[in-house]
Length: 183
Image 1: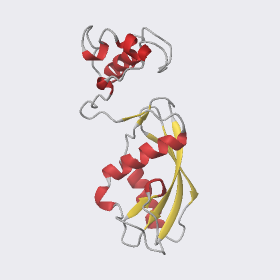
Image 2: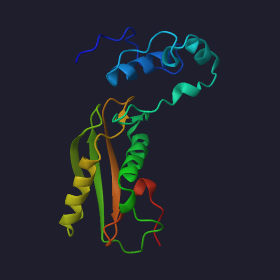
Image 3: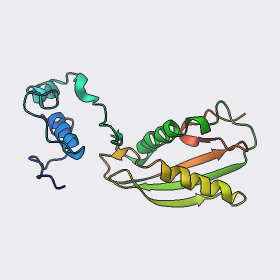
Image 4: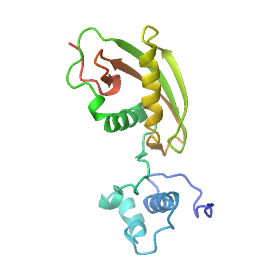
């Protein structure tokens, strides 16, 4: 389904008046709905005035549509890594090692993950694979691919982020981004 071009080709800029209304309308179109009608909270008159004055807008945290991927407002790969790690933790709660990791881990791997604008995994590149544990390599790759769609990199368009997987012999893991440390 094609959508008409956005009325404003300018990028989302929090310092420009009206950016919030344009962002909401774009998100509504992306979710498959029409742009919000005039007077609705997503296109409320006065958005530009509130944004210009710097007032908080409580409607800024819109819940995602059912089945829609979350959105990341990260403006660099390091910030996006936080959102991606939190996403992986949400989807793999029972598999996350709770507490500080033991001093000796079964496997440690460093992986680059390439995410497109739709949150899909388009590439995996091992910077340091745990060669002694090929089953861990396969399980990490399966876990990452199964977690798609990742948060949409709204400001980046696409992103490649790097994280270190800390794998315990129990099969549970932590990501270096959110690790609780090691004994």
